[in-house]
Amino acid sequence: MEPIPRTALILGVAGLIPFVWGAATGLSAGLAAWGGQFMGPLFIGSYISLTYGTVILSFMSGVLWGFATKAQGPEAARGYILSVAPALWAFFMVNGPAGDAAVNLFAGFLGLLLLDWHFWKMGTAPDWWLRLRIGLTGVVLLCLLVPITR
Image 1 (cartoon, rainbow, N blue to C red):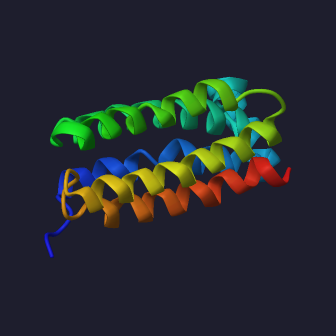
Image 2 (image 1 turned 120 degrees about the horizontal axis):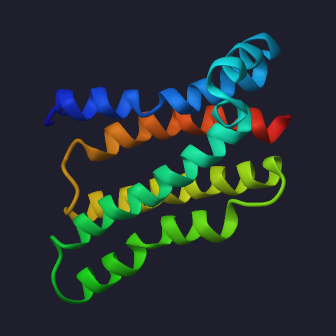
């Protein structure tokens, strides 16, 4: 079993910081007040969680597109079609009230994990990919529970 490359792991975990910060400031009024004072209201609570989550779903579409380039024929065509789904989902579904948008973002990350599995199973994603994505997605989903339940 190939280990997760150190740089991929570090950057993946670092990419969780806005999600964790959004959840923490959604749970703590004091932390939200401090963060709002220094960074502004768009960088706390559900605002940062939803905005950053939308960006990440779009980013992951690009990653999946890259995996699709490793396939041939009909598998490649399916891969390209599937790879745009996370970005389109984010664009059309992550809007409206914060709680509803968070539910849709949560569903988008679950769907993304299924796509990660698909590309891994197809052999176009690295051997370590699914192990990395399961851990990162688990943290994201836990963090998104905060705007869903508030």
